[in-house]
Amino acid sequence: MNSYPMTADGAKKLREELEQLKTKDRPRIIKSIAEAREHGDLKENAEYHAAREQQSFCEGRIQDIEGKLSNAQIIDVTKLPNTGKVVFGVTVTILNTETDEEITYKIVGDDEANIKQKMISINSPIARGLIGKSLDDIASIQTPSGVVEFEIIEVLYK
Image (cartoon, rainbow, N blue to C red; front, top):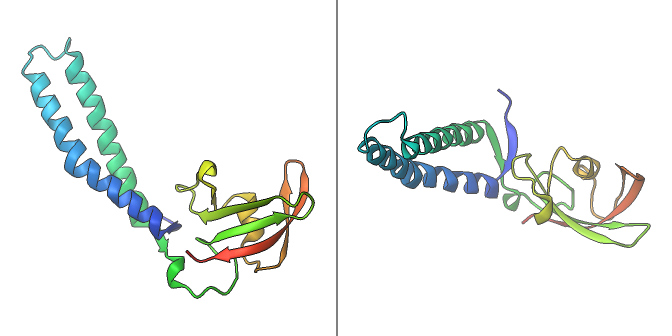
């Protein structure tokens, strides 16, 4: 299986979710199943079936997170020297050269991407157009409305 990049922050959040699932959710669900069993006939027991469904979801999520963490290549940009170069994990501010609109993005792994929080996937067209460029460079990025030129005005390794 290939490893894929993940920010140190993204890995921390996944570890916290895993801890929550294993130490709080899993025991609570097991208790719910035991209580539902005490109510008798399992075929007609909605509480039992709901608890079993929760258990299935919880165990699936635990496996999913463990798999992601075991295959993650965790990159902590705060430990790298800021060369002004756009690399995985940086926060980059770009200026649309036509509209003078500024936008700031953090370049993250696929699982961490959240456009509302301005976190874009390393595999997105914008990130791919910025990776390898440096402060003050112009990046030409293909957008649905055509090629747009962006000037890189800030690169933060935070």
